[in-house]
Length: 555
Image 1 (tube, one colour):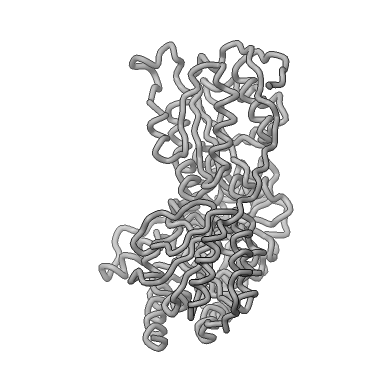
Image 2 (cartoon, rainbow, N blue to C red):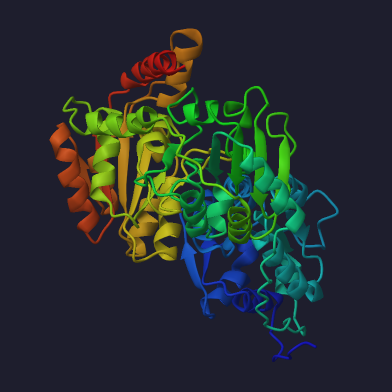
């Protein structure tokens, strides 16, 4: 049975009512000629319209908001170029398993069949990077399509959905009703008893099991269950880059984050492992060949859905149910406790590297020094968004993380430039947390215009730019693969003057001991702060050399 409401004057108003019905608090976007009625309807609703400076920024804001809340972030654009600009953040959301709804205008049905101004077939463009992409062809379809969009976006495995609204449909008179407002909370799935027994049998026969906690564990709020499982059975835990914080990095059973582009310290825990308990791990987080090169380890897959097929992720037992319940059931069924199989020397290496970095006074700054000072400036529950580039490798490896979704990394699509707009979504989702962006100078200038959006919205964020005047990660890869790098360097503006031109506060680091106090000052300020910090990436190749030396000494 549906609940009747007073008929809305236009379909645009019906769409907004449907969004309100789904609990939407913010829509990120830019108005256009063809969706002005939608934006106007939002202005008269309970929904906050966040005007951005680029549709790509809007999509990253919506993605980050969805990642932190578990509710689909919504981004909006006009047709043609506006819609196309939403595509990158939409693809990033799907590859990062994050709920998002992208809404755009489309040419009217009255001209969609012929060559027409700004006409691009958008649905097939979005289809490969979404869970569902569709055209809202009739006014009566709106309530069901909006409900379906949110259902698909938020259901495991979450991802992006896309709806195109033709201009003449948006303008049409509406006499349709909303679907009833129902909050359906599904009953947690119990793991199959037979699979629990099979998993317990594997663990009872194991010598050196290791837990790998991924993004799905963060989405399922399974941190407490992972901790309980590890402590009950005495099994060490590694996380993926997306799973950082699911297991606290200051726990005695932590191994750290795995996924670095070379054989890192954490990998040694997997080298010795005969069983991997993968909790919420998804293959797009990193290639499983990195932890199971011979494909000979037994894998227990614990998630809400079956694993992707891969020769190096050949699942021995799959438990498809609510993650925390599955972990508890397996722990109860295992009749033993393992002596921690961590090599204590391995477990100390990351901490020692960070400690050495903290004392490194070189200028430009050593990457490990920047990581150490960033960690010292932020509380355990504060949020750092880490952009793609050489700094991502350093932050993902070394930044100690204690709670899920406090160190955010794009490791599905691994796009650059998501962090500055993403920080706006993060601050709206978690206003009580301090929010810091860690970005390279290349990524920063791709979406730096959203500084104005943050200032206009009175949002306090800190942007820490690792300055090396180059695409540092590509330089690093070139040096590793071909022995030199070419065409990766560029010039930069004066970042302090650039920040001040927006009305933000700019800081320039000129000595290593300036960074930590500057970070603390900026984080305490009620504004947008931009810190330009020169970095010495000569440490990149030295890191690879040191990892090779450790490899030889421990194998």
